[in-house]
Image 1: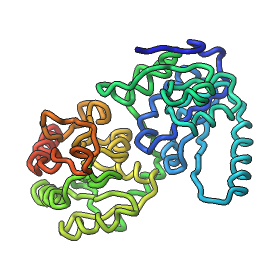
Image 2: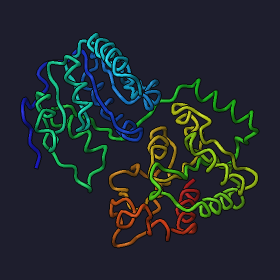
Image 3: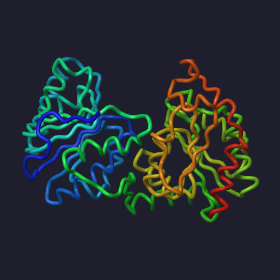
Image 4: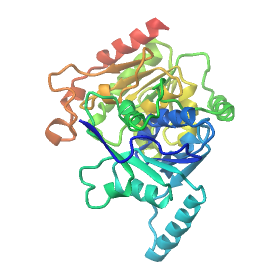
Length: 359
């Protein structure tokens, strides 16, 4: 059931809007249609987006917003924290927000909305926020997330409930020409051939239960470089450099370790230069799709209906078990997923051949 408490429409034509998305990097990418919707509905307004600092760079080329506020998690003394927060919220109030929108149900976003000074504050109702969190907002949408609904549609539903509409629902990330030129220079430095099929492979996730075994990635790279003449860029975070190097070491020529070699914004530029992205359910999958690169998402217990990029340019490799998707952290919470253990390299290859055949 969908219920709205408070005003059911935006009270005034806002001059300054704060959109809060304190989720992971993938959540920020999937929120870009919300930014576009605000710009299309309020073309004269100043639009500001608050995200965790690790994701802020992704939005620096976004044509629909005026400013990005990075929200920082820091380890510091109590007094330093008080001074930092005082300065942060003083700067926040300088935007003179009329409207604040929180896309999540946590407490930090609610505090941002309240202290922004916005006269109208809207968000999702939180079942555990009855003590004070829900009372921060002037209007709430009471809508339970449905597992059969894509996350993009769920996020947009908050705006739509208050009359903010958008026809196009595909996440989009802009990448400046300067960033693309820098990626091309990096390719030349590493003597990467630009004419071959360029494939980004992201084998890793924050969660082990979303990953294939290393041997399968190695076999997949051998097929890509040997049978298809592709050049493969193994990507990942700085903390995953050693794991990526282990794959590259066993794959021979035309396979490069790009884990930790770029910032998150330059990673978007790197993926835009690729012809295909292959990776697990992670931020890289969403970034690749948002910059216009075809993707093959490797899914285990999580749901492609909720998380996979949509459209003809995007495919999914997932085992067809009755229990899939279980949406659990591995089988019975074991951090180990049988559906991925039994997903073969040939299962993945068939999906790639379909893509290459269309090209």
